[in-house]
Length: 492
Image (cartoon, rainbow, N blue to C red):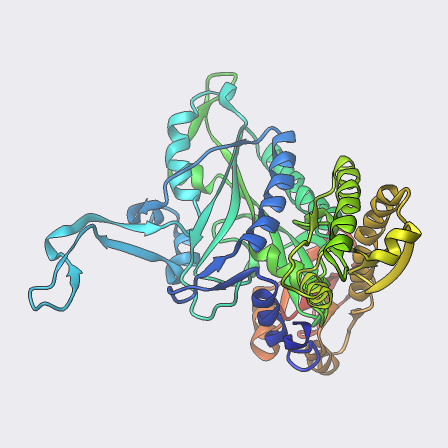
């Protein structure tokens, strides 16, 4: 099975597409640009949801749900916002079909045109702030902290499973505050939640920073981001948190009476991550044999594969496996006994390697007699024979080591592909090699756009952690004075 996966060095893009299919994560659907997330892929997304949802609730955030359809007039209230999403919007114009009078199937009923066209949710700021107007009257109603897990539609022309699809799953938090300082603090708090999740759960090293004005969310005064590096050296925006100021509050007239009874406009944030994290998980850690999953996100952490020549041997090994399974489950680990009798052990080994199961335990009659088992770890593809006595504690420690090792490997790769650059001609060559270039920028949108036009490189972030960039210098392109370096990269 593993041999059917294209090598990363041969064709990185095809390698990625092969993994999505061979690891049973997703497949293309009948709708162009949309995917079917299969049970194994969705189980990983559910684990991401569970961890993040618990963290949000620790911060006082409550879940709610808002409509999929948004009146078109709502988008016209915030000019910058509508400009940012106009080209990606799917629009509902009619509400009924009818039989074609010419007998050619069904057609849209011309009599069923909507009085006002509806936008299929690309993001929910406008519909949510139209509701918040009814919920917020006094300073006592603040802060208002809501999140929703939902799907959104952005009509992408060039798609790739998980990374960029016309429809995708995400969460979007929307909070309302009495002061700018409180809103800005919440935006920073939530991006740190994302960074902590990326590092500890996804085993993904990220740089936290501010987006440049050109790269900010449409309608935001400030956007904070977590930026990750994939194995091909490209950047991936893994999550964002936005300080929206009072733009949406003013657009929808959301005011509150402060403690002195004076009317004030509310201050806002929004923040979100999506199934794009699935793409990050694949591209940051996996190899030519298949997925490499951090134990924290693996739907199956340990798979047990019996090796036998007779029904008696099979029954004896499976009986021992039941004890090992119970021992590991008591320690909080998900375990599967692969007792399929129609497949050879070698095929099973290859299948679970492709699916990225962190630990595989194999046992045959000789192992059973010796009181040992063969334990293989997916991250290094190494194997070791260990005593069955105390194997639960051994595997528990091994899983912790695998989680840390996957992170350390990704961190070493990222840090080995970060370099400073101070010469424009050198920049044009180096940026095509991949990785993050730390370069001086004069702070102007004109320079940023010129660099993007000539090289396709964008400013991924103005860092606030992970790399030290505060130093005097001159812009890589314009030569104008600069007070700090920023992270440039070619991104997904």
